[in-house]
Image (tube, rainbow, N blue to C red; front, top):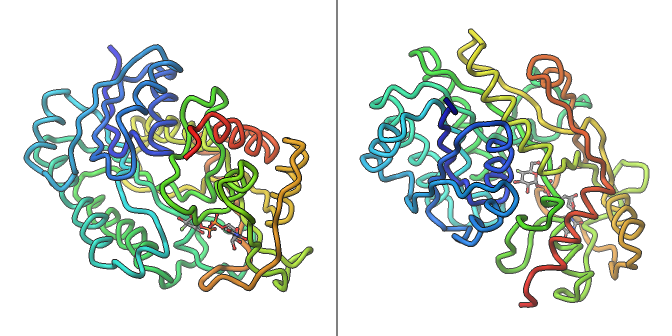
Amino acid sequence: MSKTIAVTGGLGFIGSHTVVEMIKAGYTPIIIDDLSNSTLNVLDGIEKISGIRPVCYTLNILETTELEAILSTHRVEAVIHFAAFKAVGESVIKPLEYYHNNISGLISLLNAMKKTNVRNLVFSSSCTVYGQPKELPVNELSPMIKAESPYGNTKKIGEEILIDISKTGHKTILLRYFNPVGAHPSALIGELPLGIPNNLVPFITQTAAGWRNQLTVFGNDYKTPDGTCIRDYIHVVDLALAHVKAVEHLEKTELMYSAFNIGTGKGSTVLEVIEAFEETTGISLNYKIGKRRDGDIEKVWADSTKANTELGWKANLDLNQMMKDAWEWQCQLPTK
Ligand code: UFG
């Protein structure tokens, strides 16, 4: 019998790719999404790729009673929890909304899981919990620092809550994502752009598509080989596959709590990302060098050895593939 996994935020960018990979791996994902940053059309893309249209509930996870009903009706075995607000800058302006949605939402979900005796959870965390690490690459034992933004703090507090809950029979895997980019190679699902993108890759593709005039590279006076910031960009399909491995691992591990870095282990500068985009697509990108962006860290990339050895997961797709898939997704979006 196929195991049922509830995926909160399953219509979002990482959630939808994970639902596809869960179906491919033989699971039955059910989606719980409040459509705050997604649309029901995403279900069409999931169905076209996987041949299956998953059950989907339009629900905010703060609705604990309804959540409980869903978890028990479907005899859910584990939850993958994506549903959260994720814009760093917005979180500075609306901290209360971020704490309410991300922290109260997590507590509501944990209460519903407790009531229905669902004990396994995969939690979306972020490399933001490390800040600017003193030593690179960063591994899971590297010190965590005070978060720069309310968004980052919700990830850190979320992790702390889950560590405490793990002492009461609740099993958790924390996946600390580095920089997820790209889209499904079919171009049927990807990141839905809402307003002006904050993130580098959607800004690159929208500039190339003529939606934006010019990309600004935020600073070229950092202590890196070409002066621009370094990040560990990871293809969203590789990231989705990490969730499948995490669910499998939860079923067999005796550890009640573990954290894994999910990155490629390779850092790329902003200029290298632009170069990869230009090389893959043959498009010359209109960009200029601008001032540093407040709050940006200089460089970070992952040591994902723990995920390689314990989860049996490894990133396979390179920066060129990320750019190709991001571009193909952009090209099929309706123009504005
Ligand atoms: N950048 C530009 N121009 C842009 C946008 C970004 O030069 O228009 C640069 C940034 O300065 C940075 C790099 O591109 O050096 C990546 O920036 P992103 O905004 O794409 O990603 P961040 O690393 O800043 O943030 C991401 C996620 C956060 C998460 C964080 C963890 O968006 O949710 O990684 O480090 F918290």
